[in-house]
Length: 619
Image 1 (cartoon, rainbow, N blue to C red):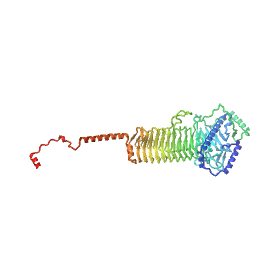
Image 2: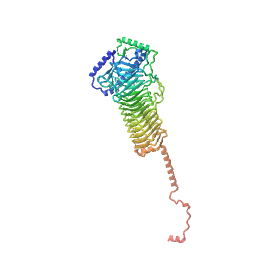
Image 3: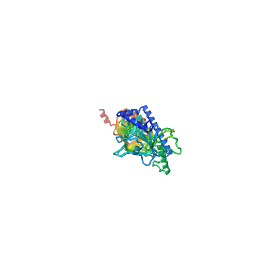
Image 4: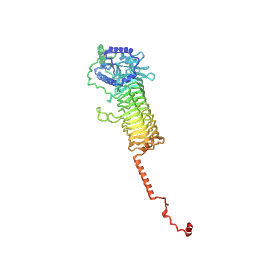
């Protein structure tokens, strides 16, 4: 937490005072109130200020840990920093990972075993570069991270190795904890406990994490972030000390013991006074960190601000994990997350999107995953450039891509099932999309998008929509049912081939605006509506060939059909044909007023009749 008193005796007093408040606290928190508090302008400003405060604290701690090795060998041990508004336990590099047993020794007043067997953490933990912490315990570990209106704690690894590990029978459980209510902290307006790995390695398996984080991605709950600077790769154990160094270390320990009255401590943890920081020794360089890497499997994450946030990461694998009820998005792979493999991840009932691939995330494969009941999209794949021209940060202006969403399910999400925004070489294949506003949408100039073999059903508007400058889209082998428009192409170039559209209620396949170069062929279209193939609004040459529309019931009126077929060219040819026929008929009538023998002019003249015939005729 962030007590305002200095020294361990002051910390103990704060803890006792907090425990006393718990007796008078209400029995339950108000989750709805927490949600409302997190959306007001005042709360937004407060949370943003808390994030900035956390950034400053981590910068301070990093500066001290960078200088510490120049102060003597004694700083090779864990030590505690007073950062003005709280304490941070700094774990330094050693050969073996720190464990729960080590924390009990290093922080006996701030890492305390509770009567129910859980552990309560009431100060920040910071893993220095190369340090390793393993949060695990035989029989299962329950870690409660203090989080109240007075402050919150965090576990941050800066270039170290953080492992959260349980077993199928006894998972490790981590949650925020309000000691006044005896419940997890559900409010975010005053900040909330979180876990973060900055560079280094992170691993989590058979773990249950809940109700962590607030406001930003880096304080999201569980966040894996890194830098884009080269990594030395040194996260191994410490180097062996020489005999002279061992003597210097002993002298440092003796000096530290002599100063115990001025700087209270506990065990091997030493408290340092707050104040101005010593100027760094220019001979010592602050270590540069690489992208974070890690593996997460068989985990459950619920109630976080963002369920799981990953940025500047390389080679992350996430599998067999459930993310639920996040206040914002579920799983976010943010900028410069690359070569990630997401398998069998279930992201449900989150306030935003289920799974998000943000701009500058590339070579990410999402497969066999489910996004259901989310407030935004099921899956979002954003490959837009970080900048469109010269920028202050000098960002790359090209698109990002080589991402895929395959063999996955998007079900009953409030916005779209799967949305592709810009980017290049995107694959959306063999997915099942059910019950959203639109099923699969590609837009904003995406290039080379393959939408193949998907089952799309029960969409309020379009089943598959490609619009707003998409090029080289290939839409093949999809089955689209029960949508207002089955397949919709607008101001884009696409090949729509071999799809089945059934149960459409407006248009089966529609091409609108500049769609020149598109091709629609070998599709089977069934439904009831004004048209099976609507291309009357298309501009440019469109090739429409070998489509089967015999099962389509046309409900348009006579004049609608007339306008549909009465194109200017059609009307011109009709007029020409009618003019020719009319002219022919009039010409025949002028030449032949009556009916005559066709060979009258060639009939030979008849001989005069005999006299007796004439007499008989007269009688």
